[in-house]
Length: 505
Ligand SMILES: O=P(O)(O)OC[C@H]1O[C@H](OP(=O)(O)OP(=O)(O)O)[C@H](O)[C@@H]1O
Ligand SMILES: NC(=O)CC[C@H](N)C(=O)O
Ligand SMILES: [Mg+2]
Image (cartoon, rainbow, N blue to C red):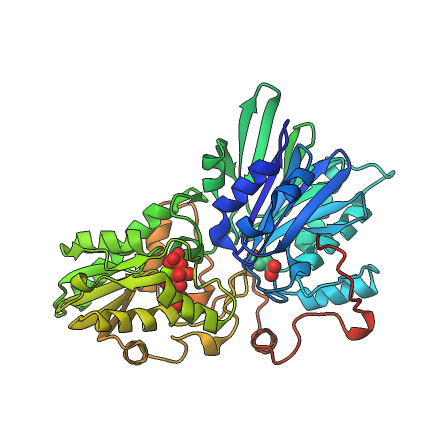
């Protein structure tokens, strides 16, 4: 997942974008970038690393202007340590456009080919987001009449993106000398919300992946960007919007509620925190129905994300909720770290068991999800080392059995603990006395009950049903090969790849 931000203000925005990125850091820890626009001039700084490490005072000073966009990256294409793939990306024609993308395109290779052969555009990294930017630029070039940019031409370009790009994309883009564009794919898979703030100089606008950025920066939420919709805010603050596709099919990603988003965000009208409470309740009901024979002394969450679910689950079961693991607040999220060895090491560094909560007890550990099993394996061993008598493990979401192709980096079935394993085999694998998973209909109901207008979610990592309808067995096999390093990632053939780093600051 990545985090994106866009702002149009009447005062300098560098500090606001930096603060906003800090609020979205949980969505991407590998790279960060800010672009501001000062009239028709862009100022960019981006690099690999966490927000606090990427920006120095001198970098901030150079980010002049009253509008801009920003990005934190969690890579799903290309590589994790490539500063050239950090975002925003830049193209100089037409007009000059910078773009930040959250999601993952599923027809990147085909688009790369089209861009090169038909549109005569060069893409210089393995990033699908650079491809997306070039499609947008090409479509905008085609839509502009008499060399003058208009809102109509921009919306027509977004329709062109919807026609050509498949997969997930929530996007912020800045067009030099014109304004801020934000749009969401026709399935609305990734979140995008906008808000405004009145100042003496007029209205200021902020677009963000999650509402927590609006709240904390003093903006009031207007609404979510709708699936297939584009909004445009010109540099002088004029707002316009357009539904750039006739029949959007809204299927937001359910894993945002399970794990990605911050609990204090509201996404598509659903409080993430409340959805996690409901997941806990439904899981408790399942335990009452099917696991009443387990003699549980205490419920212990795996910090951080599972806390609300574990708390509510304990309440429903009438069993004590105790903090058995203390988290080192200076270590980031382990699941989104690149590479299995660093993830494994980080779990041990991040969480430490409190012996008194385990000694001689039958404990029920609760996590939001079990994906690769990195966390659960380590944690269960730590619980046993701390003296637990029996260790049961509950997951607030169902077994993750299918790769994600929409912006979560779990592309290979082999790395997923639950693929091809029964619950008993999974329990054995992670060393638990029993493992209890949420049922998928319960997970969906827990989220959907908070906004019944949403009729379907993307739950592909649980059920293998890919909402964009273009995912074939062949695609998954190629993705697995690419992402496990067997073949190079979606890079252009050597004859047309230049070793330029045009975009890095
Ligand atoms: O089975 P795994 O592959 O280990 O993945 C699942 C775990 O990873 C995440 O935690 P993470 O440490 O990333 O973040 P958190 O502090 O927000 O819970 C998630 O909350 C689970 O604990
Ligand atoms: N997780 C994401 O949203 C990734 C964005 C983009 N596909 C990248 O790899 O940089
Ligand atoms: Mg966790």
